[in-house]
Structure formats: structure tokens, C-alpha cells
Image (cartoon, rainbow, N blue to C red; front, top):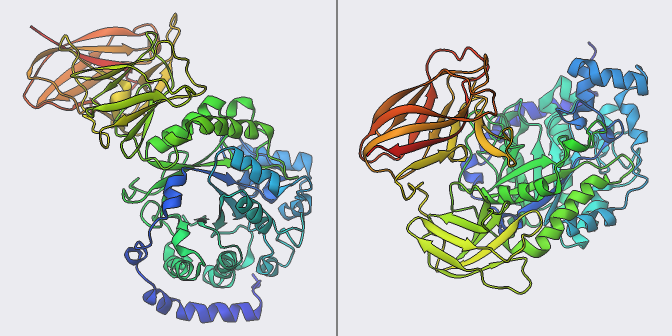
Length: 608
């Protein structure tokens, strides 16, 4: 095949290749780069807006299980049973090239000021725009993007004929928000990338990154597309070192962890999860830096016209997803996918405004907070700020009480954040925890925040304690799961009004559920399992391990269905001193049917 590289480019690439090892040897180590501190504003911000917008926003179509910004790749690979190719042929023609979408990406309805106003009203504190996704199309006047391809491939040369990055940066900052930029390392259909990736990094990638930093000074830099190659190819350490040394406000800059194959969770100023997945080989993540969860309001990041109403999060889900992410100690980067003409779909605006209205009343329980001190909060979530504890309550008990186990601090005051009268909430305390009386109070929309002023930082005994009769109940929400298919699900049994949690999809023999820590005296206990088994599809043997004892639990009789629950008397086990954890694991043989059982709870009842 004839080389597509101009002679000058090829010569520069050769020179770079000869000097690249020397450059890498001089670059700081990842440990040295870790000396850069994550800025306080980023740790306190908690809520950002992600924007996927580009040429892919014209077709805005793909299978609803995935991302529409990958449209070009789905065409190339004939993915999803040919769904995207069929759509493309029927609507644009088989000979219509992806590059032909660029003039159709016109942004004729776009108002950057309107976007920025929406983000502020949503309560977001920062914004991250895709300056260039994997298709290589640049939303700023990158001359090299067009030069290396031989056709116009940036938003100033074609399509909108506007510097989208520059205009949005100005508008976002005018609203008092921080501005960040996403940048993809890899590129599809780039001849230089395909022929010589080292040359691509030097000729295209590094100059583009340096141009973005110098021209726009984003306070969040968000690389991506790194996963197939090591950081040595991407010149990750050299590039990040250049950014830290040349950014005009490096002390305010937050950079993510996507700098080379296998590095997610290990480098950068913050770690990134995506729909709950870290995306590295072993799932480990540094504890000393904050994480940021990114996800869409629907499933796709870019707008996908195939997504129906039910794919999108409800208002409740949108608000609670923010709460739960902050409760785990992270930030939420919530994505929107604008249309090609520059409008944010109204269902996305509606969800953003729902979050914003809730934050107007309850923002003190989000901004500047840290993670929950509790291991489990079945009534919702929790956040902390110094000696303040915020309890985010989703569902009120029928008796209008809220029980908070293990809280040891004296409580100076308790009130509901949405109550304009700031009336104190009464409470009582016993050995197991604190009970708050919410009678006469109305819940807030989406989540009610009970704000506690404590005597010092929250101190919580995270152990699960026995009831007054000495029995210990371990629920599905108390389980830590290690495995491939086993997970917590919500279901409603026939005749039940409320949805309840259970461990489901126990279809893999290697999956283990661990319950604890708990406090349980030594003695003999009867084992009761609240379980469900469908005839002909479930059953098997569970091994229960607790306090040095091992017990086999035989699940042989169906209960009538996967959501028809019954109590199984699984025998008696003798537990020794110091028992604090219980393990449930399928026997070594393969689970031959659909699943072993659905499990709501395990109850250990003392035998007198």
C-alpha cells in the first residue's frame, strides 16, 4: 500500500521516533507526577456536566445498549447484527461516507449562553466538553486535524464554522462555572494514526493538546481513548509533565487517570468510573484521590434517537444518583447529548432542572461534603461535612420514624433542610442507635435531608447488631458481593405493595456473598433463609461459613417462583466466640439450572 504520509511528516516522525526513548527517560515518573495536588475546588464541586457533541450528533443513532458517538465504528464493524449499517443505507445511502456528515453538523440553533445558564440552574459547578472524540473531528480551529486527513475536519472550517470550544468556554466562565475539555488520544480513519502511531502522537496529538491548554486553559483535562496502548506510546508522562508546567493556573487544574493501558485508577488527579465500572484489569483504585463517575441521563453519551422514554432516568433517579455518588465519596459527571442543531433535548433539561431545584434547598448536603460514615443505609444515603451529618432519606417508614444504627456522637441539633421554619426533629437513643420522629413532617421531593449537628466528626459503629430477642437478620443490602453474576436486585412478590431487595442471578459457582461485620455472642443458632426458587429452574447447595463453623444449606424445594418467597429452616449451627462475618458460597459443582435461589435475608435465631 502506498504511504499516505507527506515526506515532511514522515521525516519528522522518524526524528521523533529516534528521540522518543531519550524523552521518556527524562520524563518524571508517575510517582513524581502524583505530587500534583487535586484542587480543592474540584473535590468540593461534586457535580459536573459532560457534553458529547459532534459529527456523530447528525445520525444520532445506534443500538440502545451502547453509545451513539461510536456510530462510525459500528458502521465499520457491522455491529449489532448490522443495525447501524441498515439504518445508514436506508437513510443516507450506502455510498454516503461518515465524513459527509460534517457539513450537516451546523449547530444553527446553538446558544452557548443558554447552555451555560441551564448548567448553572442545574446546580453544576463545572462542565467538560468533548473537544475531539474518537472520530477526530475537532470543535476548535485545529489546522492539523484537516491537514493530516486532506479534508476539512474541524468546526471552524466546516459545519458550524464556529469555535465551539472557545464560545462555550467563555459562556460557562461567565456563569461562574469551571470549564473542562475531553480529548481522545486515538482516532478512527486518520491515515497517520493508522500508519505510524508514534508519528501521530508527535505530529497531531501533542500539538493539539498543547494548543487546547494554551488557548483555552481548561481547569479540567479529560483524556480518553487510551486503553489499547501503553503510556509510553502516548507519551503520557511527558505530556502530563508539559501540562503541569505550562498551564497558566496549574494549581487549579484537575487531570483524570486515562493516560495509557492499565493505568485507570492509578494515576492523575482523580480516578474515573463509567457507569460504575473503573475499566482497568484488577478493579483497584487509589484511595488517596477522589473519583468521578461519568454516565448519561439515558444510556448513550451522545444523543441517540433510538432511546425511548424508559431508557432515561426519572427525576427521582437523577437526584438520587447524584446523592449516592457523593455518598460514596465521588463527583458525578452527568452527561447530556445535544442535537446536531445545538439544542439540549428537553427531557435532559427537565432532569437537570429537577436536580437544580433540589440542590437549591439541599445543596449544603452535597457541595463540599465527604463520604458516608455508614457501611449501609437502607433508607437512602449519607454525606458528611466536618461535624455535620446529612441523612438523605428516600422512603419514609409507615410509622414516620427513621432509625440510624451505630451513631455514637451526641447530637446537638436535628432538622430537615427543606423546612423553612427550621423546626427541630425529636429523637431518642438506645444501645443500637438513634430513632428520629418525623411525624407531622412532609417529605421533600426526590429525597428528604435530615441535617444533624454533632459533637465532633461522625463516629459510627458499623457492626450489625442483634435485635432485642437476640436474633440477627442479615439482608441482601448487607452483603458484599464478589463474583460475576450475583447481584442485588429489586422485585415485588405477588400481593406485595413494595419493592424489596434480594440477591439474585446466583448462576455462577464462584460467586460469594459476605455479610458483616456484626456482633453475635457464641452459641447455637437456627438458620432461617427468606428465599425464592422457581420450579425446574433453581436449587442447589450453599455452604455457609461463620465463626469457624461450616454448614451445608440444601435448597431442594421450589417456592412457586422467583418472586414467591418462603422461609427455609436450614438447621442449626454452633458459632464460636468472635464471629463477625458470614460467607455464603455455592458448592464447587456447577450450578446446573438457571440459578441457585433468590435470597432476601438470613436470620440467625438463638436456640435456648
